[in-house]
Image (cartoon, rainbow, N blue to C red; front, side):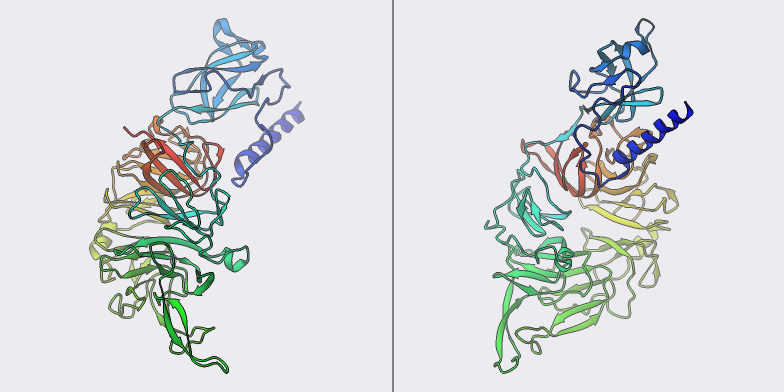
Length: 549
């Protein structure tokens, strides 16, 4: 008997590892939860219950078999327990063919199961109703085949977006790292007036092309677009022009170019060739870039070398470059020339930069794993003023900063706040379990106090205009309630049930965009590198309807 129990226990461990321990799982066969084991003469049917979706406090009846042998309904006693998404539900009644339960007050959508004498009998996935649901009419259905890192809202077409990242296809159609979608999520044709290139970056599955990504798009005041990331060529007239991780595009995404004279090659005479008009960049990947109010360009990253082509010494087939040392953050003119007046002098910058943003005043806030910036103490976060100098007031407000790495920062200019996530456990001496909200001046927002997070970490946080905070990660429980990987928190860190009904999320979020759904209701457009949302197979982009009223 002991061996039998041991085998059952080990079998359960193996099952849970297959279902929950491997975030890369996309499919595990047909209806893996249906039926369960029947060694005790019971089973929970995989058929939809009645009703098939309900609010907390509602009664729902599931089809089952053999429960009466383990029940004393007249005394309201049951030897088994019923769970929805790992939350125990009150059993209202049971017969030999059904079980009626009351939906728990705090629960997310998820798999149902009966637990009897250590054995688990799985049933159907159950949908808990609330103020958040997937917009099933939104255009993109199959997502992307690679991560979506960022977006840019079109400057004249409200709620229409350029998507950028590391993908090759969108909804099964070829798009190399850049795509354009309408306000209803419809992918633009590759000959659209706003998107007329399907392969803007090197395309294919070679090591060189697969490593190329874009992560930042910004508008200039004249409608041109700044595009940066980790890439060394951009398409022009069916050829690829050489560049260094950044370029300027016209408003139809065609590269802004010019003709230059170059040196003769071999026996040929001197000639001209087409080159990017923006002649500047970095040898290292650019993590973030920004267009200033004056139309200049700021680049941020683990960068130490600025690069500019010397066309007077270049040939028709090979560019010659001039290099200058820079320190993590540097500024260029609109034509790509290095702005020598910005961050001038012998500066050190920092190592281990992970993210950055530009605030409404034109300052640059940089985060990462560093503890010094320009050889001054800066515990994982620092602000540079418009001249590129460290903002002493911000540093004072930060205090002791984060006691661990800050992996990501998201800034809401309307709320004048920023959210940070990482491996830290405190910020300026106050406990914060890997997620914190700061005011624009660097002080800790002590209103937002996250609750206990179990089963994993927070790896994304973004502040909505309402003050609510979207978080996601690998966590399984929040304040003792199963909330697998995705939450919309109140401004004080509380998890209000009606906004937290979605089921399991697997992956990494990068953006949560406030917009409108296909029916004109409040929406959240989620982008990232994820494979499941609400327990469903969804690849990297999804539109939610979110009723915050």
